[in-house]
Length: 98
Length: 136
Image 1 (cartoon, one colour):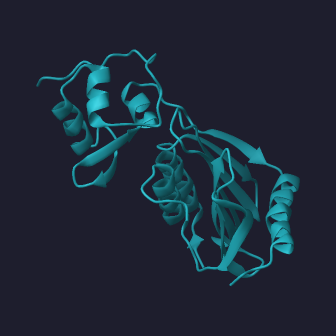
Image 2 (tube, rainbow over the protein chains, first blue to last red; image 1 turned 120 degrees about the vertical axis):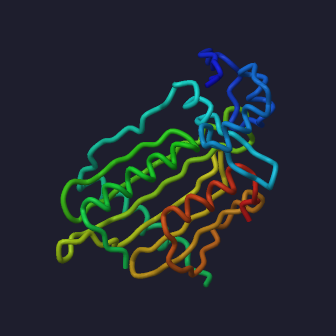
Image 3 (tube, chains in turn orange, cyan; image 1 turned 60 degrees about the horizontal axis):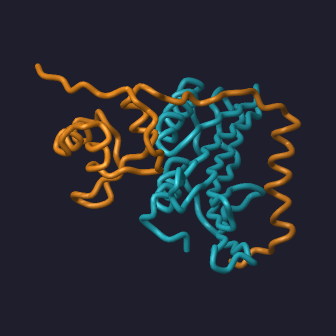
């Protein structure tokens, strides 16, 4: 089975979203190859309409093996209490319009 | 009210971490024990796009009868640089929504709302961030 070689270069122009054609140009593959990646879920893309896709940078980076892991940390009770105090406090300064 | 077993709660967090990472950097902060606040922040960096944003998902869960029950939440999309906001909240006994129109930033419009699932909120926020819908 033929497999495409994906360049590992990551020093390209960073944008929030790319078209399939831009991804194809960046990786030097045919645009139909990019669409295949989308349809086989190898490359995640938002589908804006029947034939219009936008690929987020994070998906491209994932394809290139450059993923950012989520950071995790413990939240103290004091922090949690403060967050909810702040959320509740804004209602005392902005009356409901419902 | 949403009630989950411990494993389901862990799976839920893992699932949203993966889904949310499509949009940007994900940070998760969790309180230990019950009540347990979970704060998930997604920073959408923009990279030249007109919309950069911070998404914030705050929930508190408590153990009741061996199950985790969701007791309040605050899901917010904040445009960066602002102003601009869309929020779905449930706390202090009320479901409500916040909306700050970038064209009229002086007011935080504040409406009665209904229950909104975390993933549904994320989908709504994503639609704004990628430009499928205007904020107002």
